[in-house]
Structures are given as structure tokens and as C-alpha cells.
Length: 229
Image 1: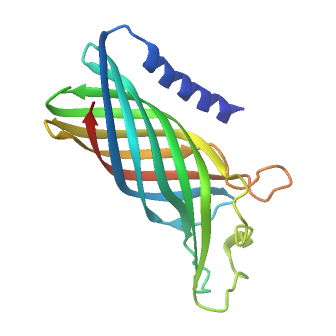
Image 2: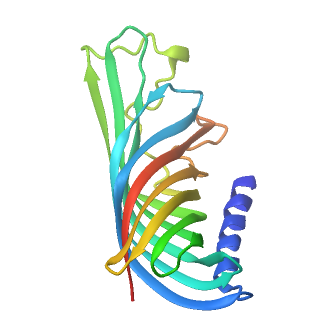
């Protein structure tokens, strides 16, 4: 219930920004593309040690600037992204085994966009924040390292994840990013760092399931290009 409440609160905050018209009205629309790299981990309980898992992402964005309230430029930003997540285990039990899982998602963030700086020509800093829903389209397990595969000495004998397909393809959570962009006559060029905190779990977490939590957490850096229309 707490996770659902946080998700709904984030969505309400985004919607409030979209419809509140208490400042100087704007009607500026932007369409753009983005591409970058991200690294994902899964917050397993019981814990599984992990290392960096860099993967690509790319997508399209639509932004609607609706008002300027004092110095704050307010609007919304909706995206449709293709992202590669998963995790890479840090196996230190002397087996020499290696394991990673690659998961492919379609992401749909609905974010409030708050900017400070130049609107037409010049530099602007901004914050994007809001809820995100995602859907798993494919996944692949990668076993490597020394053979034969030996799981007898895994810490706390956490091996339930091996060979187990993702049970919850639908994912949801909260995302937020901080960035800067340069508005020019040829379009808007930007860079942004973003974090996604998953509220859903990839496996079941009922009393009869093994894991108590197994949610995505993603850090990404992306470059953007947008044009006003």
C-alpha cells in the first residue's frame, strides 16, 4: 500500500504541474530524441552482491511548457524509451563462475519538467521527476567463467534466481533527473543524469516466495536533442 501511495502521489504532482495556471502562460511544444548509457542493479532481499551492469538506452520525448512562475519554467515531459537493464553478479566464492542477466524494457515516464534559465536562446538547468511504467519484452541469462557450474559455496546459498524467468513483466516506479540544455537556433542540446527507483518486483514476493524484495534501480546518463514546433 505504501508503494502504491508513493506512485499515486508522484503522478498527482506531475498532473498538478500540468494543469495549474497561476503564472505567466506559455504554450511551447518540443519533440526530441535521446540516447545514453545506464547501469542497473536489483535490490534483492536476501542480498546478492552485484557489480556495474552498463547497457544502452534510447528514446523519444515530448515536452509541453505551460507557464513561467516567477523564475521557474514549468511544464510536463512524456517519453517512450527502450532500455536494457538486468544485473551482473559479483561471485566471490572461489568457483570462478560468472553470471549476468540482460532484460529489455519499454519505458513510459510521465514527468513534471521544471527549468531555470533562458527560454529561447541560452543555457537552462532543469529537473524532471514523476512516475514511470515499464514492460519487459525479452530477457537472457548469461552463464560464464569456470566450468563446471558450481553453486555449492554461494553466500547464504542464494541461488533461486538462476534459471528463473521474470514473473512480473509489468514494472513501475519513480524517476527523477537533473540536467542542463542549450537552446540554439538549430534546436536544443542537453545532457541529463537520471535515477529510477523501482517499486515493483521482478519475482513474486508473497510469503511462499523466496525473495522479499527484487526491484530495479537504474542510474543513467543521456544526451538529448529537441526541436520546438
